[in-house]
Length: 468
Ligand SMILES: Cc1cc2nc3c(=O)[nH]c(=O)nc-3n(C[C@H](O)[C@H](O)[C@H](O)COP(=O)(O)OP(=O)(O)OC[C@H]3O[C@@H](n4cnc5c(N)ncnc54)[C@H](O)[C@@H]3O)c2cc1C
Image (tube, rainbow, N blue to C red; front, side):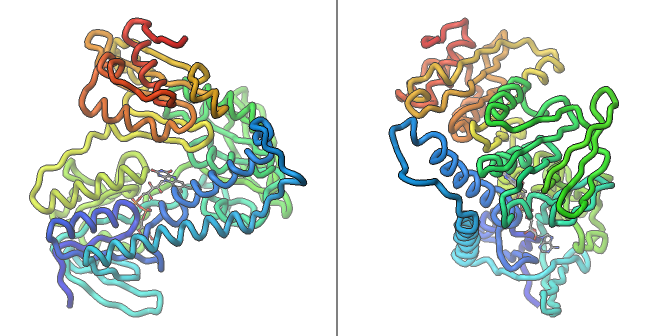
């Protein structure tokens, strides 16, 4: 039987990063993945394929609607080849998952394909798809088994017309009318993909606004822009039934006045969140406790109730984000190696990759009010930037929230072109506990979208923005 210092169960961004860091630290490491490809949800059916389709559909929309503004004429009709778009996405995924295999080899990590389940707290059984079993021994185990799409108890996900993000990433036709249940990140990104490709899209959301966990100003701006793009929204609607009637899906909901409303479409994307995945892990054989939400319970060291077993990523509490899982992978590897790492969860950024993009870090205005922290808000509109006018991406803003007394940056919230990349400046500033004045006195290249960060910082330090 092979013996390891560390066995990692699951090869998503949490698991594979944990394995690499363990190997870098000189620990003999194994990684177990039940699917034939490495990379988990993120690489196979999450971040990477969704971004590939967002980019492709953006090019298509530009060719249809915006090339003309730039003086580019296309003789003849612009046509969509959905099959080719999907096969490009598949090859991006393949290159990326192959990259993980390369990294495992490079770092001399043993990879096992099969379902990993605990026999006891130091032995893991690996059952291959061909029905062969083998057991490995591990001094430490990291559970990184991720998550699966969640649903509502009365919805039958038939994967044909009533679908999750996994099916939405490989549709063979553009829906005529896609109903999206849930106005969170995944629903909005995939809704926008199909809207650009020609579908009518209606987003049905239970809360009174989309992206409800982000700053209300972002939600308002994104709603405004997506409405201009002709996406329809039904907020404050509680879905009560979803029925596939053959060629059609009928969704019934009650609005805030209690009136029943009916929506009809040919596809219904159920994007109401994700749930932790521990099926087949036999956690109880090792004595590992789950909480009532099905998450593996961990302490501040991400250690389970069993001393030598840790858990990271979507399967534990916290934001379900690839970069959060990665931070936790590094954290646990370093903890096992005897180091004292640290993660500041307040500084894990959140991003929506619609266009315009939405990005946030730190406290929202609503949270600051709730915590009774006195703050100052400085905001700068993207339309006032030369860079935005040059590219034609004038929607959005950067908003910086600071401590009223000390000027320390407490939260940064953005909507606009490339803000998924711009948010890194805010994270760096906040990691070093910068004040708005610190940011406002740094030179930002001209013309860039980043100038909006400097201008918002100037606005936060006594209305000093220069270009509004
Ligand atoms: C459509 C979509 C878009 C997304 N976009 C983004 C984005 O842009 N940015 C972002 O940060 N996040 C995004 N996410 C979320 C992101 O994918 C997850 O947060 C991330 O993948 C979590 O990583 P993880 O390592 O915890 O688990 P996962 O990536 O879910 O990986 C878990 C792995 O464990 C394997 N496994 C499970 N049980 C066993 C077992 N018993 N034995 C062996 N293997 C097992 C699974 O097969 C899987 O490969 C998106 C998700 C979706 C669905």
